[in-house]
Length: 298
Image (cartoon, rainbow, N blue to C red; front, side, top):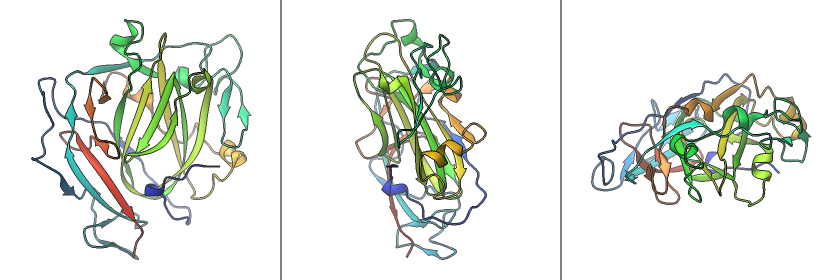
């Protein structure tokens, strides 16, 4: 069964033209010891680009703004993020033949093994070997930190609703949230979270989204990564066959390897932290913790 992200569900509709851009800028320096700027308490913010209460046939309740494509209404509440007092730099993750050795795994059980997705030959190939990341200092010190989630945040602008393919894996564990809602999590203690490159289809509404990707190492080498491909026509990724036929490689719009050389904004003893249910918002000059509420158009 394909996952449904209730806060992000977009209505099925006709195929349209899309653009997708990512911003990963953060705020706050290493001298900060408390919280980011942004006032003394929560504030309601309108972070949709060109947001209006009514767009096309989409009319929104008081306090909500229509998304750019007019497919839903949003309201965001933000408060300062907590600075944990240290910053980790993003480097390439480990490369190993066990990463992706079982290839791509789709929700219905379909499995594809080749050099692109990964296979059982003696070469270290597959997507995790191509796009995996880990801490630069950790790679020099036994791939520390261990037993601690680290990751990064991204600001995503989607001008239209559509379906997307998510590919993801991590050694030892990996998880992804969108707007504070968990989209994928694999916390098993065996090797399957990184033996497969797991694919799933997600429906995303238009407008701004706060994406968070994190990995956890239980010891030894480490790497985690994800890619997002699309957009595809809404409702077109309904099964394994449709997902396998989609142009994943030709329509990849985000990859974790693009963060190489940057900083991990998320961590338990590094980066920034937010309460459960809110997302680290790096769209502005200073990181904030933002809760997004989405409702249907009136």
